[in-house]
Length: 289
Ligand code: NAD
View: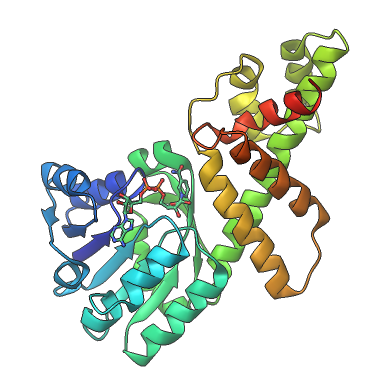
């Protein structure tokens, strides 16, 4: 299949390479020339603009930082709604506001373009290994059409509802992940300041009802204060903005989401933005210093 891929960063680069490996003809575009060269080395073709990238495509995937970039690539004069052919399947795999996905889907429908929101969980490792979890919003027929392509990128692919629903599920995911990091950080501070070995304490937690994937994967590095990303505080800050906006749009109050968002904002304000989101531990430590 002819696939256009816009946004060849930490996630998009290896995802595009996996599509090449699966036998697709991939034409990519990124504002960074370095990223384009990496795609060419992986066997894809570099385009000079979004318009050129999508011109021959049957499917166009976007993997961009945030809503403004997705809107520019979708709605801009050089963008994919203007230059994509009728019947094009646009799969936006970026993490953006549900409202952005709905607006893209509505505008795409007017042009005869089918749009899905399909954000992912699983990080850079999942992107490289093709083991992402993908939560898809959109029409059921379009999700079925996308399945063979998504199957080259992930192992868990779930149709969760209409346009925007994928982003709402991703927002819920980021809320839970941020909240658990905050609680594990508080548990470490409590254990250490009570003179209890945090490694032994967290081993017990991991085996009981408090157990979680975050405790499984991150408790050792958190106790050792190793915060190499992983998933950066900066990106989680963006995602908590999406959570708060989605809650406002849905007309619900999520008090813990507010606390988690402010703790992550504090991490960023303290200059921890480039570190892994487990660096929330530093914020809790500083509150108690
Ligand atoms: P990234 O910054 O590494 O990649 C984004 C790429 O988009 C960059 O290469 C950038 O040059 C390019 N870009 C920006 N604006 C552009 C434009 N107008 N046209 C073309 N290219 C443009 O980010 P990433 O880590 O790959 O994340 C991408 C998305 O996936 C984000 O929404 C992020 O929240 C989400 N996500 C990331 C992870 C992770 O672990 N990194 C995990 C799950 C989801």
